[in-house]
Length: 613
Image (spheres, one colour):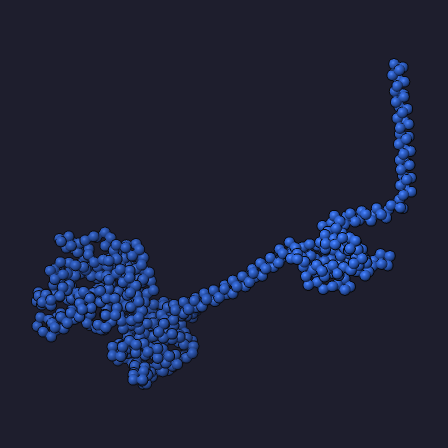
């Protein structure tokens, strides 16, 4: 135990002496440091700073007041390819001029932080800082390698410039597109609301104008007058001088009408030889009469159409002045139209106000209009069919004829068709009839081709072609079984527009018949020009063919000419055996429609007839 105890004490004593020795050694070292400190301190700091500068990635040069190099770090020596011995004491401008493209010596080396130096396709940003120590000036130059940043910046600037140019170019293109679209929109709007021949507002524009006046009136009566104008004898000018001269006359009249009315008056062309004038804020009948007389004065002067053609023309004017506000658009137009037709009946070249006498007639028609409106809801309109036969009597096709049964009474077409046209309801009525025909043909396979009449007013309806396109899309197989009949007088209105719509109807696959040929316009020139498939010769050319050789030859000539123009012929109004036998001697494979074979009949009777074959 004692031995162990003594050993431990010994160890402790040794530790004490060891710690004392360490303390002594530390004190000795500290004392040594104090002795050599003043000698080594400057050199140590200098070496340490040079080591720090040499390991910097940037280029650092320290200059004295004469711009001579005092310190140049390793990165700078490597870039400028100089040793430290050759660099120290050299003017910095000598090195910079030798290595940087287009470098202009910095005489005073003023402070700068944004100068970019180019060296062998590399770029450096030079920063110069001036410091003052112990009244001595030193300059520290720092060159940062910004090659990648500068190149990227240039690319970005180039892309930015390109993008800006693209934006500018696209902006200009968009402006052009917007301008072009605005011009197209304005042109389209002009086309929709402007009569292409005269440049006047058209029917659509007139309707909108009148609707706006009606909608904005709050008084018991409207303060305006409506002129409904139809030219007298315009058809004769077209017949004798041709449509080109007729168009020139319409253009001239449009300009003259604008000159003879006030600048605030609205002058429009409805189509053909029909014009309207709206006079707003009218409180005196004298003003209306003065303008009407101005327009009638047109007949006193000859209008120059060409060097060799001067014509005079008159007009019939129906006037409705300050109508009551309980009247709708259709009624207002119809009243002015009724007054115009009354002028036609009493001698033309005059004007007439819609008055009580005309109002009584109008009210009578208005009663029929109300019945018609209810009949649409009750589906009181239906169709009869008159067969059209080959010479052997076999049914080849049939014509659909409109019928109306109201409260048990069968009302004749001549009593309600003109009213439908006058009131602007004929388009709706015709669509209903066409719908019925498509429906019949869908389920009644025995019914052959069916023809249906189209009114001139139908062609002014912008929905006509759209309606027929929808029918074709829904019933593509039925189109070839449906034909449309138009009267030749249709071409006295707006021949160009009519021709365009007839072409579209033909393109859809429907056939076109000219009905009642010979009693109206009677121009083979237009029959030749327009897409006509079948000529239906009116019954007046059949009535006397049995006893009158001249009438027989006239009929034969018409048939011959029609076949020369590659058109088929239907002869209407054949009522007797003698007429039938005489027609058979014509020598042409014509078709016959008339009481000799069949009167108009109901659908069921037609089906029963057709099932015999």
